[in-house]
Image 1 (cartoon, rainbow, N blue to C red):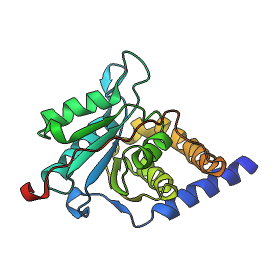
Image 2 (cartoon, rainbow, N blue to C red; image 1 turned 120 degrees about the vertical axis):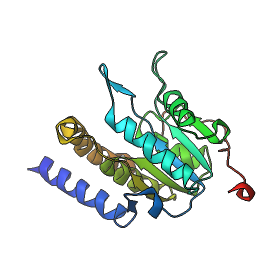
Image 3 (cartoon, one colour; image 1 turned 60 degrees about the vertical axis):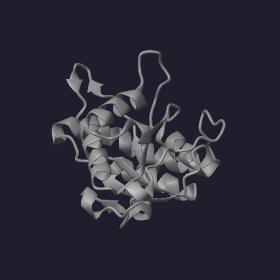
Image 4 (spheres, rainbow, N blue to C red; image 1 turned 45 degrees about the vertical axis):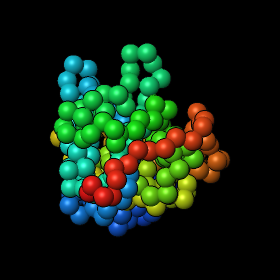
Length: 204
């Protein structure tokens, strides 16, 4: 019973904080300097990861429409043969985003790490977060605690049969997010400040 109450409250709390801050099309997103693209694996087994594919499409749309001046990719690079930011960077460049306006955060081991590092390491005060809906909601919830003004662009979800495992994971992640904020948990890695490279406003 206590577990059910915790899950229900966490889901309500995260959704309520992010209410009114999500957009389903890039055209509707207000102009914000930086898109925070949350990392994920490009493949699931031997198949393309549909969540990954849609995040790349959504971020590319933001750039093409001039909604952002730079992109911060934050993901996991904790293993020698696993590098989410570099995979995403490569695919964004192939989609037409200039490489000089893409900045990678290789220490985004968790969503918490990505958001706090966006503030403490990259000095961001506002972002448009790109991921799937429930993940964006949780990231906005975390961003609010880090004094980041955040909205989200919702990348299309994978087919429902693909989502089951993700939905279970997200339910637990929302409870963990509340606990993380309650105990003041910090990213595994911090470090020296890094500047996100931005396109000049004169060329927009």
